[in-house]
Amino acid sequence: MKIIEDISEMQSLAGSARGAGTAITLVPTMGFLHAGHEELLRVARGKAGFLILSIFVNPAQFGPNEDYKTYPRDMDADIKVALSSGVDCVFAPRPEEMYPDGFQTYTQVERLSMGLCGEARPGHFKGVATVVLKLFNIVMPHVAVFGKKDYQQFVLIRRMVRDLNLDVEVVGVETVRESDGLAMSSRNSYLDADERKAAVCIPRALDEARSALSGEDAQAVIRMVKKNIENEPLAVIEYIKVCDKDTLQALDRIEAGAMLLLAVRIGKTRLIDNCLFTG
Image (tube, rainbow, N blue to C red):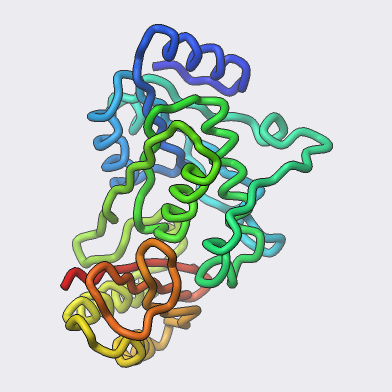
């Protein structure tokens, strides 16, 4: 397994693989890998002959008062996960090379960046779209694999690929959960013991929401989820929305393919999750 930090070296290796007719799959991450990332890598391993894992805590997607400096990092542990998952190359670029002095070109997916996490984190999705486009240009993947826990991000990247005619297949992987239902996230490591117990209010509320029937009033379902989460004293709701799964536009009624998306703070930790209504 190769470990590459230099952009030109990564481009050269990817170009050689493409020239040899080898399919490339990319799994972009910010590291601190967990079982959810391992599932992304498992899916990706079945998609291509050359699997690249990128590890890059992207400063462009963090706001000035967010956790860029304290975001959990453990490269040694990540390398072990990469080896056990059959990764062919780890691309871990340096921030100063990804964003050199004078950098001023950013990518914006307009409507899909609005609302939900985009409202709470201004500029976040501009940073996400920019770094993903840069990674696509550097790694030149045929397939890129993303988790659906970050659903707004997934839809936004898929839209960017369509709008910019990028020759990349975007694959989404369902959320991997802990035994009690909490969605796996690197930020779960911020939770202390009491907060970790409190965080279970999120999957419990989503489980109840899934019982909603087609045609049911979306606001009634939102109120039900809100009430369930508010029963947990450590939980502070940022948003709960029922949206179209493709456009992320708010819906008045539950219908097949509608999504419920939410963000909740447990203590100082911001957690996001979602569920799909299927009938």
